[in-house]
Image (cartoon, rainbow, N blue to C red; front, side):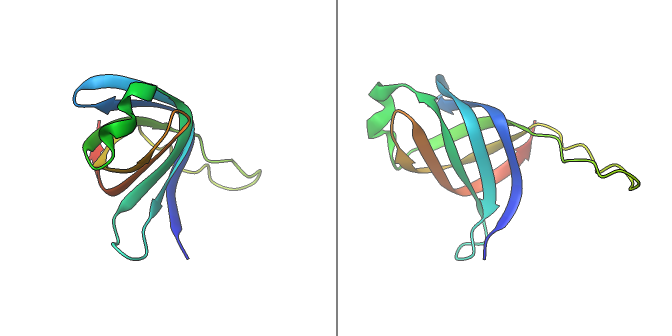
Length: 105
């Protein structure tokens, strides 16, 4: 079973220092095999980056707020963070980044 670390609806992808696209939906999970963060994202990505599989990408992510339950203490607010990892899958609408490292923005 995979553990979801964060999810959201806003993010920016950078490949080789250049802005490659924007994420409209994403989630970061902890991989059960490598025990490292893995990103699964959907959005608009430049088609000319399709050959970037295997290279390093930097993704700036803004997590969605955690739902608040009435009568309970409010959950902590997750700060924006940066994930740097290897591109495992890339198309004009979808990206998967594996072997990631989370860096605070």
